[in-house]
Amino acid sequence: MTDPVRLLIVDDHPVVRDGLRGMFAGDPGFEVVGEAADGAEALTMAARSRPDVVLMDLRMPGMDGVTAIGCLVEADSPAKVLVLTTYDTDADVLPAIEAGATGYLLKDAPRDELVRAVRAAARGESVLSPSVAGRLMGRLRTPRRPAEEPLSQRELEVLTLVARGSSNREAAARLFISEATVKTHLLHVYAKLGVNDRAAAVAVAYDRGLLTPGGR
Image 1 (cartoon, rainbow, N blue to C red):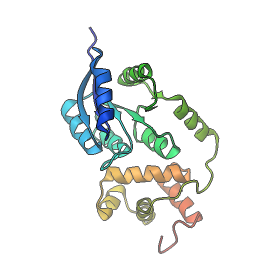
Image 2: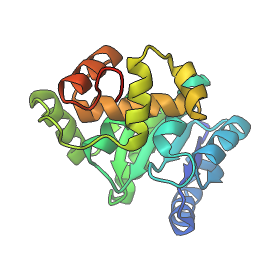
Image 3: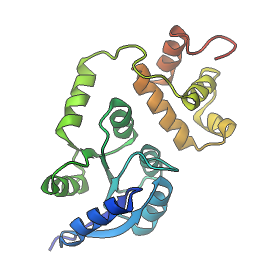
Image 4: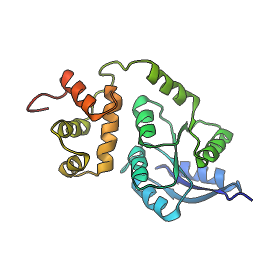
């Protein structure tokens, strides 16, 4: 007999957690080993309960889902992360996938599709909702238009430190945030600027006037 898939549910809305727990608890193929209301709690629960799959919301108070995904990857957690959210914008999808999410589904997915996706994620297979898959393909085929989405104040602060030669660790210390959060901000910067690395992000930022020599 195959062992049930051990599942950790992460969402800041109790009603959503209750619904998901009820859905999976009634299926002998799954075991809900914990619930968390934000990313920080998810990390604690993941370390304690050792789930096979983490069903992760993205936009939560405190530590968000992308930051939590990055922390799980950094900690070499064996858990696979399946994002379950209502958002499918580039600013949400790309950072989550780049941070290490195994799959990405929207909350309007039918129950059967969600169950299949969790099982697939447990096997290490990538699962994407049709709209997300289409968005990723479009992102690969179509060059990003400049300045589609402005950088946030924090993203500019991180990019400024990077431009001055700071490492992720040094930037984190200067801004009193974690290295994982710095990485998340950089992923958002890359997505917004349409680049893939630090050097390109700095070059594009100078070219667009987001950074200026001797200042920002």
